[in-house]
Image 1: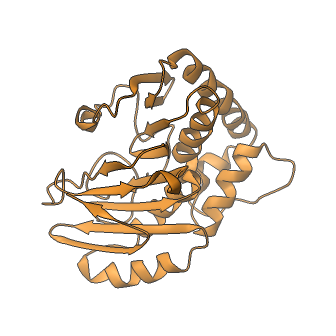
Image 2: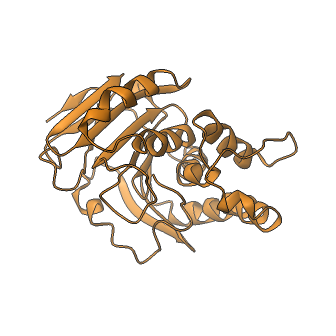
Amino acid sequence: MGKSEFAKFGVNQPRFYRLWMKKENLFSFEAKVKETDLYIKASADLQKEAAESIKKHRRPIEDFIKSNPEFKKTLGPYPLSDDMPPIIKEIITATRKVEIGPMAAVAGAIAEYVGRDLLKKSEEVIVENGGDIFISVKRPIKIGIYAAASPFTKTLSIKVEPEETPMGICTSSGTVGPSLSFGSSDATIALSKSTSLADACATAIGNLIKDESDFSKALEYAKGVDGLCGVVLIKGQKIGAWGKVRFSR
């Protein structure tokens, strides 16, 4: 969702949409380390484990940025090499697929890496990181849509079946929040088995939308991204979708 997990949402940024989330018979808790602010649902209170996981996965990103400051600054594809830490390689691979800067996939990567750590202690895990979500569940769930003043906000959801998970569902917006977007969609939502790729695609596809006439172009672009399962575009009263997306009221 947007340019940078480390910059787009400070820890004091209100995340009012968390108040809308249903309990789903799971424990709900937050885990915060520096700029990373996660909202998590799991079968037990794993706040301590989540915080340790955040620290573990932030460390290689922070260290890499110190040695390679252009990683944080560039808005274009970053070179990939075999000796990079796994999370850095995953971030770069995802963003290179859609030719944008690597920081666009950091939030999704952290959500998934923390989520996979917590799956060792919980059969079900949902990790939300500034609108980017990693999901692994044993029952069908609905993910609500927030798209500014659009009539689809809080009235439309995306239904996810358990066999489709683990899955990443990530959102970028040109009208909501401080994230960097070169488009003007109220919401661009991307679905992928890779939360890093979903995050990158939400940003890249959202960048293509200046007005409603750009939906066809953006959906055609989405079809060509290897690993992308589906996408939803919302601007005002118009909505477009492609791929494995099921809506629910």
